[in-house]
Image (cartoon, rainbow, N blue to C red; front, side):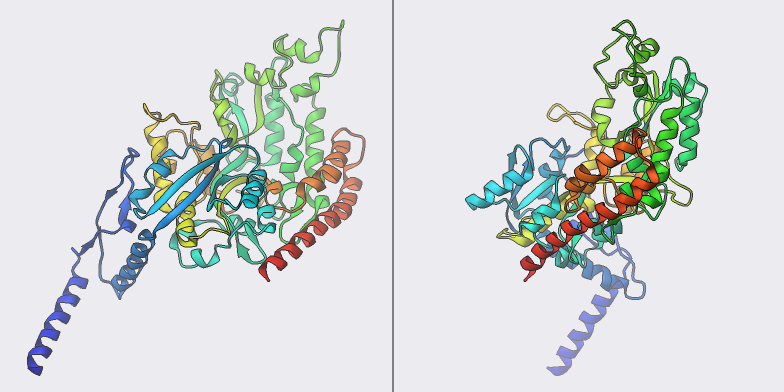
Length: 505
């Protein structure tokens, strides 16, 4: 009897080893799912596995984890702000192709997220997930409305494709509280028809502030202007001119301002451009002649002068500071154009001004595992992003109409990157921005920095305007801002950290 058992054991062992070594061995799991580019239900593709120094065992272990992930069950209530224009119907329509045991209930709300959540918290009806939020995540954290996600992402391979600067921006007190769902970039709009008429070439994607100055001057003639408006570009250039600086010279790590190092050069650049005759169309709105005309009207005509972008819309402006979020209305222009990367300083290639929207799990959720899987799918997962990209591959349908021309993923997963860059709407400039996710800086600090709006309204904006208008000197103003604005922002940080510490206790 013992011999028979031993022989049977040996046969089974040999069979197992042979199957592991066989190059034709195939498994079908949700982790091997590839999205149907039509946006319909997903199709399952088998993946061959080769035995090479134990890699089969590692791959099988990963698949086991994936199987467990996709078997998560429960009901998840997702709150969506009706004012957000995210194209997301594929995400929700195909969610159960991956998570058949999770039921999603979508609820929409209007107005600020903070007001909605305050009312829900008082009523005891908080959602499980907040989707596509672009407001103040630090405030939600301070109210104990947000669940830390570190334990959920710690061994997730898809999470490793998010750039560290983005992860850091959602980390408070050493804990990760939100996940990025899409990126935007401040950019330079370029009128391609006018570029051709002026016999000019597109700049390099890594062009410098000096290149930008010469480009605008070259595009300024008796009929055209280099840009419509320059106001506020110094705040962005303060970050892009040096790899060591951020928006308005803010130091993300130490919570203080270093405007003397970066903003002074940036605001002086803006002042130089404004002084060039006719370069900034807005500066031509400066005189009344016979009570009914000014230099702006003389140059561009008496159209809808109440529109501050009249000349821009007429096609008489070469460039304008715009964001990728503006594409929804820019596509209505009647001439050819493109969005180009923001100019970067020497040694700061790819240091671009970036804006990020996020999704997060509400701390009071009764089903943290299912809620996280929903947020994971909606934000950085390979399958979720491929589903979302499929919408832009297919375009408008009889059922759904796209609101945007594209979205910029926040994952650099190779399959996502390949499909994203293959979209017809992804130009050279947009692709460069996407490739710069890991080297870019946050230009939407009001979303992630405690007290930013208050400090900006009290110190940065009024003192900065004095410099822009030539009333005050840039260097002396910067020295003042580095002192008073840093003390103010640190006070807000201290207050936030005290609340966070109490929550963690």
